[in-house]
Image (cartoon, rainbow, N blue to C red; front, side, top):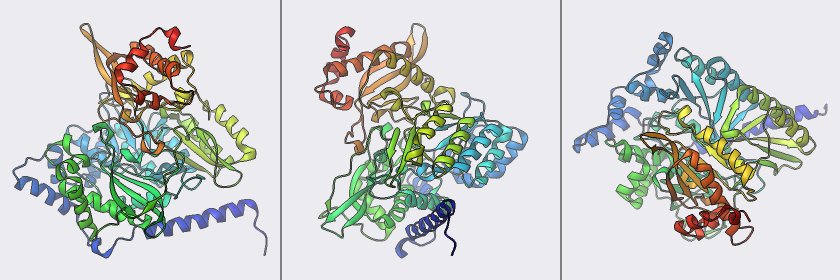
Amino acid sequence: MTEFDDQQKQWLQGFVSGLEARKAADKLTNRSAASAAPSNLDALQTAAQDRTLAAGGKLVAEETAKRQRHPLDRMDEVTGRAKAGQFPKGMDVFLTKYQGLFYVAPAQDSFMCRLRIPNGILSAWQFCGLADAADAHGGGYADVTTRANLQIREIGAAQAVDLLNAVQALGLTARGSGADNIRNVTGSSTAGIDPQELIDTRPLCSAMHHYILNHREMYALPRKFNIAFDGGGRVPTLEDTNDIGFVACQVTDGIEPGIYFHLQLGGITGHLDFAFETGILLKPEECVTVAAAVVRAFVAHGDRTNRQKARLKYVLDRMGRDAFVAEVEKECGQKLRRVAGAVIAPRPMADKHGHMGVHRQKQAGRNYLGLVLPVGRLTSEQMRGLAEISERFGSGTIRLTVWQNLLISDVADRDVGICIAAINALGLGVEASAIRRGLVACTGNAGCKFAASNTKGHALRLADWLEARVMVDLPINIHLTGCHHSCAQHYVGDIGLLAAKVDRGEDSVEGYHVYIGGGAASTGEQAMAREYAKSVAFDDLPPLIERLLGAWLAHRAAPTESFFEFARRHEVAELRDLAARAPAELMA
């Protein structure tokens, strides 16, 4: 028999890996007999609405529109408007989001398209194809989001359906990526390559993704819904900010040893809540079934009368956590396994900036490279360049992260230097200052009608100012979000900035409320940021942040004390006092 060459071996390995991943996904989507009864989406949703009406409630306009005709069945309307070169109006703006199209006027007189990319992982050819689609039908660029996803912007009315078709031709979809649906399913960005991970989240995210696509009752929920899987790897997934967070753990005794997932529910940091620990342990193959049961319980009990109180958090607040979990178990047809009696090893700590730079993989002689993307934006030319680099020096895989950047994986030791040089030639890099490594910004008012400030532009100007004046030597995250929707999750940043209009005489200018000391569980820093300053005009913001960082560097308890630890060690009034001192003292 002829010996395979290296290229043939690589192809065969990928082929076999694909078969194994498919087998795992098939296993994960098998539902128990107790929960396998078919259900009709419209009947499920209508029954929930009927209960609201019978109790004397009044459906909000969005619920009435969904009741009249399901939004997933309105593609002909979207196609008709595209042929006429028209954007949607009124309630049709909301309904069109079910196809993944967001009319973002008045910020831009165009559509934005948000995709669904399970676990945030794409092939190089898909990435290149999206670059071509952005050129042909959009603005020639894409934004990486805080759900390890991509958005294409500046799509004309007549080009909307052509863009959707181009996305689908790549084996991707935008279906249900907005409005009252389950958003992109996130997982560990280093899944399958991380030396410290407990489990590869890719089959789980894929199984959850396809379950959603193939079950209509997973759409038209009372409000949007987020699901995340954390595999215990080095890069944080921020699973505790999701409606459902699955957190991998290793059980060593008390019950059958092995890898399980903690079930967490109700995270929504924009409303000041992390997901709470239910005390339930799930085997990996149970996660999709239980997630579907949680969604169905949410459908049955979610508020249809008040959009501001319709997220899962408010169902939990109203019903009580135990009562809601009981409803989930009823949907599952059985009691779920409890933590009691299990001996669980601590989670390996995540690295706040583990998504940047060059890192060893579990595969010998291989590395992943974390790229710095200025506030998450890539031109189509850069996308094609990165696709070529990943194919030539890696395994042809692009991994998006919840930190608005991306990883190129499987780069051989000998190729790291030339790979970095090629990345630099695109105007990008794998290294940056501590300020830019943790800089996160939502779209802002340049592309979102809800935002009060130009978050992306301000983030870059803020970084320029701070880099020139403050020598930050430890990881720090600064998050800028444009509105109360908290897409950049300002409450979990070391410094969180929430955009606001600030009165200045008879006029108003762009500015921010400032929050400090936030963090996530996987880095051992779970806390909601506290308000530090209110209504700060942007012109006054860089000096304020400079003084705050200077206070940390001058008064930290030890050279290794993080900003988070420093901020939590002091009352806010004390921090204001330290920052108000002379700059010479602060920078000493």
